[in-house]
Image (cartoon, rainbow, N blue to C red):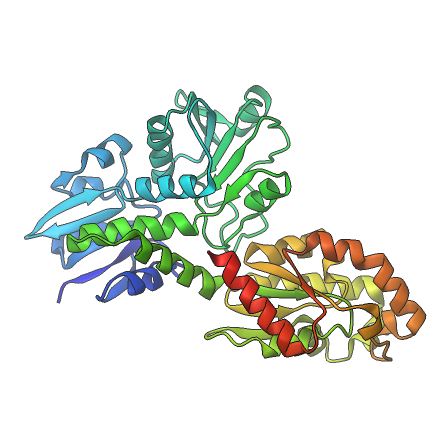
Length: 415
């Protein structure tokens, strides 16, 4: 039986199988191939249709019998259909990226655009930017050439850039802490598009949003290009509302729910009361105690608060890199910007704004083991809780009511 799937060098963390599973009724496999295996794979032609990802979007072109005009202009193919032994190549990334730019509400007409990276997706972005009326399009590379400028040149000579499109793997899991370029040198910047979809929000996107810019990661692009790919695979049409539902479903299954708030505000109880299929609850304080083999109170007494905070950051970085999590954080987790960035890369932060009258000082919490300490923490941290939150959860009658509030807000934000 001929198969459907995606070929690439490393596909362990690809979302494509899940997306195609919701778009169509066929078996879709992730097929990892080395460079040496590409030729034999296409010689056998034992597939009905496939997608192509990094680093083979240009490598596959010589094996094809026909290429669409769009793919020819771009010089990269990410979708191949086998019709009676003849291989037809298309570029559906073009339509996915176009849909993402439209979703963000970013106009490229008359704009100066910087495209980061030189691979197949970069070529797609360059053609699309021209088609959308960009005034000037520059490709940024680590090495200078006749066709590319360097990152240093971009920052020094093209400060008037208005749109940045990242097509590099910088920021992609597991290298989530990296960022391809600093946005600080570009005062005229209006928006940022990042083709990376894992994590959902790279540091580049988070930085852009923090600056008030229009910005989004590549999950919507991935889903929308898959929609066009399925239409090519099966010679069919997928309604726009069906495509939107698939995107919402994929996002819903990936985006973490992160609970922040004061000690004793009920984060763990609320988190355990949130029921979502496929989601796992995790308390970062419990994970820290499991790793160090003692209570947090004992850990701080032995090694100090600084050591505890460093271990907390390590745990948060590891836990938040995964998707499908309900994460209850320690009361001081949001005090470090690196923790907030890590938590927001794959999730939204829900601040449990329990009133001070509901909070309790307990001996097992050394930083709030007296009413006086608790009151001071409440006063010191409130602004940080509010400014780092995506959603403020009001103090309601019961933890279950607050859990329900979070689920309802989450659904509203998915639309």
